Length: 255
Image (cartoon, rainbow, N blue to C red):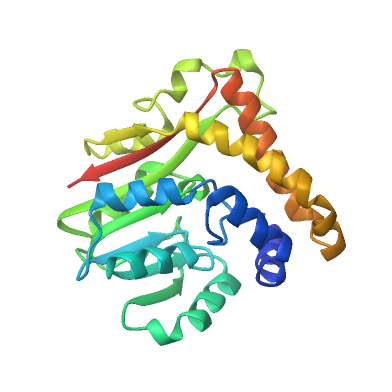
């Protein structure tokens, strides 16, 4: 997996195909490797009420384009954390002139070393999947929040293609039953959710259409590995949602 992300972050800054893919599918090219379009990011911003003066942590920020987008719109001070050093270097170089409100550092979601009571808002945008222990990760993030702080996560959960249907209980995709929900409950953190499954399905169809249109460009660039990865995601999500075995949600925690 690490090799894929090394290749991904090497290719993406120079990839016209991926730039067009993100623009046409997500509304803006924010380097999305996850599933968040502009509409979902704007919902996230509205729910948390991001504003100037707040200290925000973006866990799993990649090359930091979403963090930069949110900082530019809200005026908040955003710190981005990601395991991939190449992505962090790109973020630091690109945002050097915005260092007063954007900072990026290498960090591991499974070995978080965050100062206590530091952030007003913590965001996880399609990044918790890399946690080996959701409850421990949530506990570490909670400790880094200031009193009255918030956490918000864009998160999908469903049957993976290699898991037999009869081994995956449908009720697991309900927002109160996902692994993230269980981790929040284990930490005694009440939460609200917004169901984004219908939007996720529509985006999956859009991804398939746009990828078909852009396949020749991906091939010409030598970036078919990105095309194949994004297509696999779209096909898998489409099938799982059609089977009633996939859900996507925004989770919000007010501490």
